[in-house]
Image 1 (cartoon, one colour):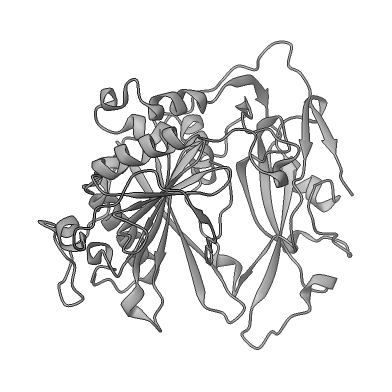
Image 2: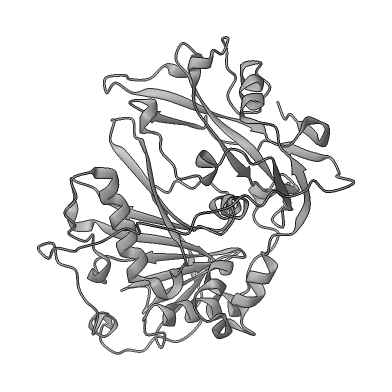
Length: 413
């Protein structure tokens, strides 16, 4: 889904509610890893990335009749939405729009997570029984013994430990629209960082992602998976990679929708200063993705099927888009929305990147196409930071992509 996620750490201070008694048997670590291949640092892994895919075609949607106006509101943020890079060329994504810019019509979807009071918590969430059922199904699919588990109440959600809270091999946190799996490297060496020989750093990270995709193919299987490894830099200049997998569909439009709304996200730790803790830490996966894997009949009449149907995208209408050139002109005239107040004139050279995405936040009733633009923040009030590491700061701005006659921009400032 279109949620930009950066996870540095997750601290859970909770009150324990037992969902199922835990056996007094000895540690299940060996049993859970039994018959699993353990990756050691001295074993060379040959990981090949997909080379060819069936080409996409443009669907060329027709504009819907009697289109309603769409409201566009910026969600409140803490701090400023910006990234550090050394050079603009470091910003790389596999957004399918970047190679298919002749798209002129895209669907707008109903936002089923619409919630003006999002800061107070979700409107809908799973109950204990549903959370446990989802977690048991996923645990079994990835080869974890689901006989032993422990469950905690997070208030508006639950978290399930396998085998238990003291020695968790896998921890699963299901929500109303996705499932998050946490892996403990100390108890599950199988997900340690593989030893792959590759000189090109970006390609190496893609191969890491492909390796874990293959390892968890039972829940991640896609017909034509695209592996995106993008990075920004921290304040010291070190790269921080993000890992994303989405399926290439037959049409460009459907692939653009997939890229922004239905993808798998991973967090892989690759800290060069502490290699012992390197490996897969988190997988985020949607219920619709689980339903697409192999035989969806396995999930019939389960909570997963119910949640996948609940999260199916509902089309509000097919809207005509403004062009990239029109979006750039709006940026130069400061006709955008952002948490950043750009306190000088904008020049074309300030535009570091532009790409067509979907803007999906709880304060908007619809999920709509928008141009995501990064601007160089030099010579602005935001550029006051330690530049000993030769870094440049780029701020995030949005230009709604649907034609202005169908748009109502709501400014919160």
